[in-house]
Length: 516
Ligand code: ME8
Image 1 (cartoon, rainbow, N blue to C red):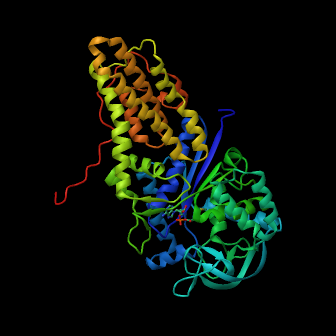
Image 2: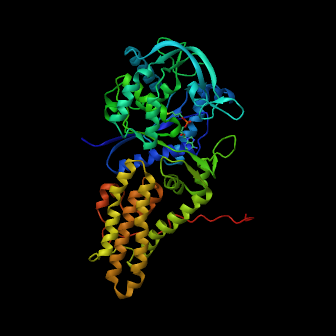
Image 3: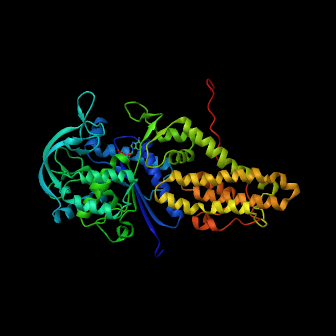
């Protein structure tokens, strides 16, 4: 469509040294919700995710598994594709950094940087953390309780000394500060933006962008003794996927990306190094980077060594996919750290999903089924109260657009639940079941207002809970073509036959001690 608005959103690409856990699922889920939301809102969307397969960390993991790195990455990358299916992500592409298209893009970017005098040969001496795949300055290290120095992330560091190509990051300090100043929305949330700006103000050192002490990476063009630093390689994935170095087709259509979604631990790479690399290559930086917080498990840091890693598949099996999707984006203000607990999960599932939304839908549809001949009732004139309810539902789209554009999912969801709760209060006050005999016309109007409210809520919640809302819209007999946001303004038609209602969100019941 000519003039159609576009939206390019990316998740980080995941290291294949690890099997997928709640952290991976969370970052991509947030992207999926925004991608689905924008598609329903009429945008031309591209949503990218994938795997980061080069570097020392992955090479080490392959060795530990007794495999060559290529077979190892082929195997483990599949776990992330499986996660995408299990979580019902709607990604349009899945990139692997070992693919030829990506190696070509990395080498083209390198050549461009070289041709513009943005790469020089030198010697690197300094601290490197394989776990973070990051160079750390002397002043950034912290002393552990055992007196050993580690990276600020707690990861072990080693002293590295090897010939290396450098990117003159120090020269980009002023340009970066100017860029942040001119683009106040580039980094979200605001607290993170301040952190990045003070880091850059503190002075930047030139960045080592090649390694010679191992082989698992993209060869540096014309100097195969070097491989590219894994973060230069990894970040490039965002332009590989839109066809770089060809800047006509998808690149022209989607670049610069609208949003790179990342965890707070990898913000520096995305908000400092990446825009500097791009500007140095004469390419546009992305429009926005948002850093979300980290999950703990029942109050504890999640780690393999503690054995408390939360596996997405286990959550889905226990609570159901859509309740998990809802919980992750509802429980914590997006950007903050959050705690996963069984109690909190069950609280939201049984409270907001089963008792509030599920009950509203069930009460409405059951009465329509029983008292309106299983057809959408014909409404009479709306009273002020009817109008307030339906107009409240009608105002949600604007509210969701505004909150989701700031990635504040919890605020948008809270606004939806204000409407859900007022609809439950309305149904109690209007008591349509009592009107059946006394005023059937009024009963029809009340049930119509409720069904319209449920329709709005179901259409708007599709990005968060696609399967459950599809089932709810089936029960309202809303045609598939009438489920996008433009169709919000096409009210239900009286007389449309409705199928028998069925509960959408079963309550979670604790298994009794000792029960089989
Ligand atoms: O960093 N809670 O990949 P990665 C929330 N390959 N998020 C968490 C988390 C937790 N407990 N643990 C991890 C990389 N994450 C690079 C990215 S992009 C060009 C390259 C999130 O496999 C973390 O914050 O280590 C990050 O966004 C993602 O998982 C990183 O996964």
